[in-house]
Length: 274
Ligand SMILES: Nc1ncnc2c1ncn2[C@@H]1O[C@H](COP(=O)(O)OP(=O)(O)OP(=O)(O)O)[C@@H](O)[C@H]1O
Ligand SMILES: [Mg+2]
Image 1 (cartoon, rainbow, N blue to C red):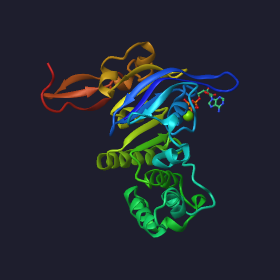
Image 2: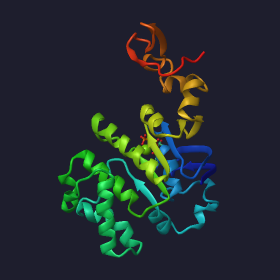
Image 3: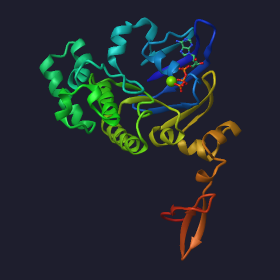
């Protein structure tokens, strides 16, 4: 479990990135932080692995205050997938994936074998192992980033807009892979995105942030869509716009779901709720 307790972050120079944030993230949960640029998402995420130190409050992992843990050990024990993959440009794909496990004492040979398995897990042809990041497509680089995040078999995986830089088709492929992986691996995932659709797709729970890391609403996608806490949330999730205000029309004896623009979105399965 990850617990944020009244966490605050004021950067030198006076920016108050996070005012007072409290949240518990259960083990094996996939939690998505979503909010506009500058709302404090990266700051919050980096407080988990001590790449950012809170000005006040604390972050606990399984009851231990991270401030008391060795930052280097801590970082190596938590997977971190950065925006635009953050790969080391002068290292091969294989070396990028094996760096952390080797630093943690895994034998080189074992780390390499596991790297090959991981490449398959994330849908990368193992033949790419000897390439450099610049010789890969954007989607392949992101996959290497995910494989690297998983390499040390961490319980916690932090993912900061990992699919932000790729085109929509590759993006939805990567999203599906991550769903499949999560089903298999059951990590605790903290995922950051700007994109509410991505948040609803990948989050068991979603946190919608206002500037200053203020929680506008937290809940399952269903809960948020069913009852947006206020106008800010309603507008953020698009509950006030076409694609999400669906209604049912009876067509040839079947219930067809139609969006606000009159486009058919699908057919209602099972019994119609009364
Ligand atoms: N190292 C820093 N020094 C000073 N201010 C910072 C620093 N890092 C972030 N900030 C400021 O803190 C606020 C929150 O930044 P943060 O990176 O957490 O936002 P974010 O929600 O991740 O944004 P984005 O979606 O653009 O990545 C912003 O106003 C930002 O300018
Ligand atoms: Mg950010």
